[in-house]
Image 1 (tube, each protein chain N blue to C red):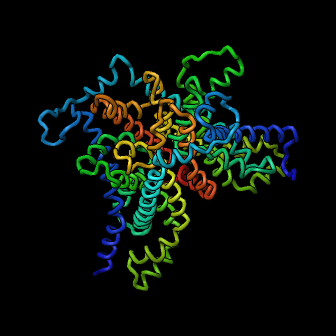
Image 2: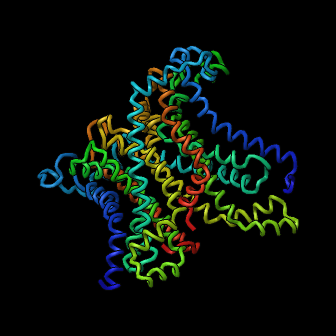
Image 3: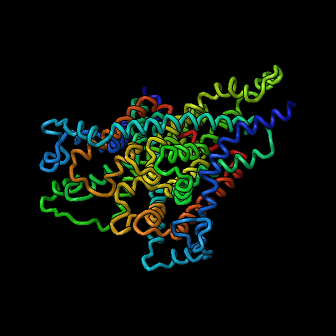
Amino acid sequence: MTINNERRLSYAVLVAPALIIYLAVVAFPTIFSVLLSLTNYNGGLIFGNPNIRFVGLDSYIWMLTEPMGSFYKSLGNNLLIVAVSVFGQIPLGFGLAYILSRKLIARGNKFFQTMIYLPNVISSIIIGVLFNAIIYGRNSVLMEVKKMINPQAVFALNPNPMVPVLVVILWMFTGFYMIIFLANLQRIDPSIIEAARIDGAKEWDILRHISLPALSGVIITTAILAISGSLKSFDLIYAMTNGGPAGQTRVLSLFMYESAFRGAPNYPLANAISTVMVLISVVLIIVVQRLGKAFGTKEE
Amino acid sequence: MDKHNVSLPVKIIIYTVMIAFTALTVYPILWLILQSFKTNTAYMTTNKLSLPMRWYFGNYPYVLIQGNYLTFFKNSVIYSAITVPAVVILSNMAGFAFAKIPFKITKLFYGVFIVGILLTLQSILIPLFLMVSAAKLHDTRLAVIIPYIALGLPMGIYLCTDFIKSIHNELLESARIDGAGFLRIFWRIVFPMSAPVSVTLAIITFTGTWNEFILMSLMISSEKYKAIPYAVGRYAGSLGSDYGKLFTSLTVALIPILIFYFIFRNQITKGVAAGAVKG
């Protein structure tokens, strides 16, 4: 066997298992899903089924124009989640990370970090069911607290059902952003900060002129993570509200799941929603690549 | 200790903020664990925020035995025990080829994997479901194990390629001169050297697999193959009729991952940062 053949063969042996399994399970279904969204396929045989027709963008038009406006409601909720991340989790996460990285307090840095990150490792299903019991219903903790404040309080449905969901999302994932900012703040050369302090810089100056500029790229990365995290949010809402009441807390992923797997299936609609999600991801990927080039981080 | 230019009032404010944050985070979890020691009647009739007046342990045997949690736990262990090593080994293999065996096609292959980091699982559920049914794999362990492995690969290959690139070429070249093939070099030199990234990857993959819910609920219908998240998911969206047992189910599901977290907390936070931040 020549060296070159050995090189080629080794490459194939090393890459093939991962590539085959990944193409079969992730890449192929992604394309498959887009194709299905252009047909009227709604269950049963796929190949050799005479009833499957190419219907073009019909499913998309229906998705965009159906009278309930479920698509817009779901997309709007996805955007609300992004907003909570961008205006809540990212600034809070940054603040916490800054306090921890500058060791502004002498004790307990590791402890605080461990505890604030804790909800991120717990299954979203557990968190969702827990907060369902805490927030909703006559026997909830929220009701108990309302009664403690005002003994005359009566049980009533929440007029803004997304608010509790957003609060729990804020509660759960702030630690995630904290960890990301912390890792990047710790990369700043301490001697720069030391030198600035010797020159008389106050904590505020260090934050403004050293830490924040060093993080500009990371802040954009976290915004992208917030969008992709919002698209991926499913388990928590599924467990907490199941999209209810009346679909008011649905996000795109849940809307798609319900269209496909609950009650009478509507695969064309579900595939159209999936394709929208894929499109958003593709846009994100392009943005990431552009940014990667702009900041000269990785060549990917 | 006051080597920082922070005044005492500021320090007090900072401590208050940190303690408040930590308390807010931990309190619901502690509350949950405490409620699991109440009977349903005790929960309904006493203050919801109170400690159990009489500690009741009867929920636990009920949940573990009637609730089938021992089976779910066993299945969770099986799924993780297969998925984690598979993702670690396959990612290292491909990562080594991408990083150290130059071929033009690498750019394409690597790119295809990296795209997967931002793709969402939900957008491929229908085709995946159809494929699993067509392959007659529905309601088997393989129906979730194969997707779990595939879903772990994008992040795995990203981390491994990045890490293996930093291994010095001279080391590999001298092994080549001694006549070692690439596969031998991988197994004897590269794979042992990439242990740090393998640990990180194993931890990320483990938490992902252990907590996975949606594939589990779609691809498997028999309870004998279901894992812990399914057991909890049965309570999703509707209020339990027995709060004591509900809270105990959640606590039982929570404890393994809490133990895991407190053992590996430093590696976990390091791994998350490595996985999430590029550059």
